[in-house]
Image (cartoon, rainbow, N blue to C red; front, side, top):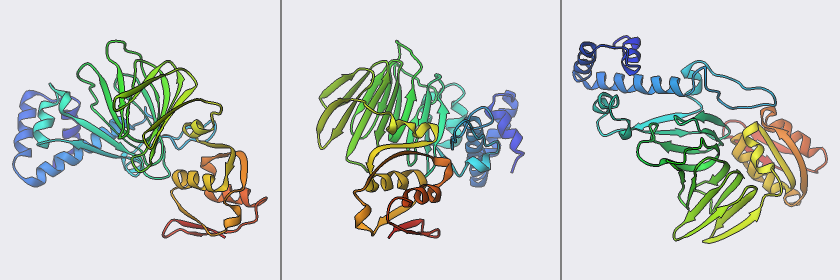
Length: 310
């Protein structure tokens, strides 16, 4: 394999035309060379996306943790670059970025925040996937979302920002809003904090005002006011809840902590509580706090990531 720095110099456009040609000829020599080239490309873009200047969020109050080496955050995200012919695309990408699609996947129990090329800030929740063209070529800034994300969109009146989901689209110019749209869930919720967004599902559309949210479920679109910010504190590393049932809390625990939770104790399912947990404190701490005033115990199977409430 060539020196990794040779690849990185090429990607950062620090090589001469002669060096470019030499590298491309080397890539074409064998399938292994193409594989080495592809792996180095993924490594380079991972480092560019989540290097020392971009924070990876597993957030506790007042703290942000930065992961400086690509091997550490490789466990947090998976970057997939969709190409027809990989080395050809890389060669062309210096002049034409619109063929490149980038996908970020967040594993269960993790959270990630990124800055897009237009300056838009995006927080990605657990089990979320987002894909987009990094160059935002064309007259729209399009991203596709499967999961939950909070957006602070950089305003650009000439190029609207559109979030596509499996159930509907959200179009904005510059605003702050949250979208929960997991493909595995029957519901979609779009919540607006600032600015204005238009939500569309099929032939129907609705324009949201600040502190309004729209719920789409079973083909029915419901507009309501936001009365609590509990559902949006996840991006700050908190799980907040008001009058939530134990069953609802365990559903959140599953998403945030990466465990499957089985409730065998039926007596606690409908008990309701209000409170707040720092996600960084972990699931054991949260369950220990809850069981102090609820009559339950639990077992934890680390191997299979299963917690049983008894």
